Amino acid sequence: GAGVSQSPSNKVTEKGKDVELRCDPISGHTALYWYRQSLGQGLEFLIYFQGNSAPDKSGLPSDRFSAERTGGSVSTLTIQRTQQEDSAVYLCASSLARRQGSGPKGYTFGSGTRLTVV
Amino acid sequence: GESVGLHLPTLSVQEGDNSIINCAYSNSASDYFIWYKQESGKGPQFIIDIRSNMDKRQGQRVTVLLNKTVKHLSLQIAATQPGDSAVYFCAENKGTDKLIFGTGTRLQVFP
Image 1 (cartoon, rainbow over the protein chains, first blue to last red):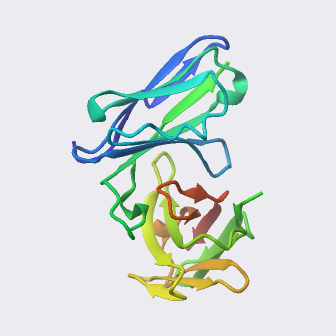
Image 2: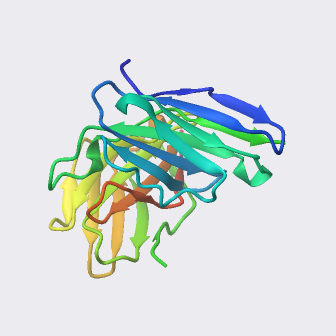
């Protein structure tokens, strides 16, 4: 597609349940990022995939959070045993492979998945 | 710890006036900065970027100023329009592909 697609756009789940959030990046973009945005807050880095390299998971807040990227394209962010503090908008972004000296200017964000844990 | 912060959470301006949105950063190793605009219900959109070897960069109606001495970044929007109403984020990059975002400033434009 023309942009980054995320699904679902909204998700309400009960505390303790597992959820899966999906991201379809722009075709040809080798880098994929997940960020979390709590209400009234900035974007918190979660995880970063670049091609076949090992993902940078340094931003994942706990072992309840995990992410996969299959075939270098679609990514799934999984949150196990959800807690109320997990409620936030989860944003995915993709970019072309970064050339040396260029910054992540080419980030394109999806519209996010709004997760509400009740 | 490292942070990218903003001086004002909300900025209200009259249509046609110029807007200035400020951002402070604490890591002198940051070498690349980006401003994003986020409208309600949408993901952030790239506005303009600047490298640490520059102190000013201009785009269409927008100018970014970087003062490395005081670790301060600003976004100036000329002739602010209702469509400029959004949350604006600055983000810093320190030579990796990860961006560190600030809290954001909400810009409200009044007729």
